[in-house]
Image 1 (cartoon, rainbow, N blue to C red):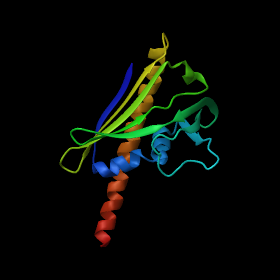
Image 2: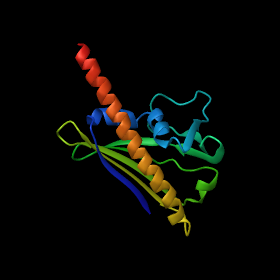
Image 3: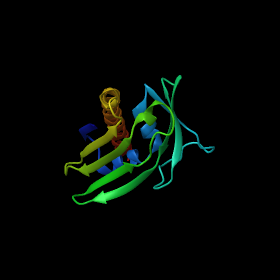
Image 4: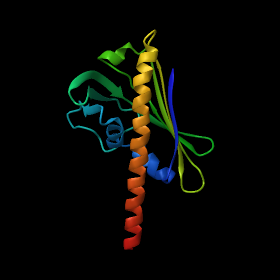
Length: 166
């Protein structure tokens, strides 16, 4: 089953692309329900490096352990000015290991008016419990969309304030 999000963001495509490359944005998008903690001795990098696995621990509200997951991204450019972040990581321990398919892709493309079309698709399979997992992930994806929309509005205001100062 697919969990899909398609939203128009009031931000330049480069701004959105920059946000998607940062672990801080991933962590902000998961809050308040899911807390993500780096298991690397150096913590999170400032940006996700392509092809480098990064182990994280997930917990519900920062209290109930949900297991560990590998985040491993690659960046692609597609025809039509589409840029994609593809996370080929997967759950390593905890209840999400019931998933037999985990395919997460985020795509951005400019709309030509300074705004960005953002698409976020997660394909999951977990046998007979897929619909139950899908319901939880669908709710989380709605929160991800709101979080990213707020973050882009905040960046747009900050950029406007900086422009006014010059």
